[in-house]
Image (cartoon, rainbow, N blue to C red; front, side, top):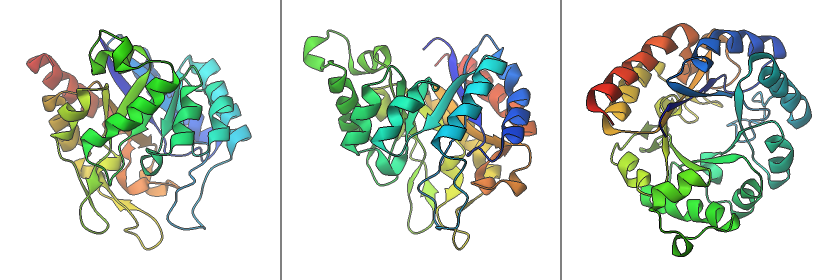
Length: 274
């Protein structure tokens, strides 16, 4: 990937008004020639801690809003899917279908995503060793008719060419905490392009008695570390006011902080020529 991939946007579609306010703030990244930009937001967050947690507007209304963002701002779109039946309709709007970490081994979901034309971004399960993600990659590639046996290219190039990415978002560290093993980035990068999710990596799952906590102050540090190790892009959940966010507020970056974090990663990437 010649350009740095940048994925940014609010965790979930809270309202059309909020989505458009965030998108307006992110236009500068979409116009940055150094960046391959994707606007991210979820139409449904099905894996919340509590049944009372806000989940989003649902498939139909959510895709309608994301399609408006695509047409109004000329942005490419990433959104999550949780069920096989969501893959086809979501791919009619989204350029990337994201597989949630808890579902990264869900064969039917991976196959359904692979049958679309969208890039498939698979988040590494918090419970998996990084080298095990090669099996999830193979499920997508083989569904798309690609195996290592019928290609002369290396694993990374095969995945890149056929639209399969992996996303690091931290590993379970005891109860209610995550840690990022930076070794996972080069390990996974042997067989697929890797995106570093700096915001979910500081999450504290279930840490707020019915919802997830986190500490966003560590986001810039982890992003800089990942830039030094070498990745293909970065994922940041962003919000105008994370304190008021209906989902993942404690680990989201304020939009005003995003530009400096992105520029810092560019400086490191350019200095090391990774």
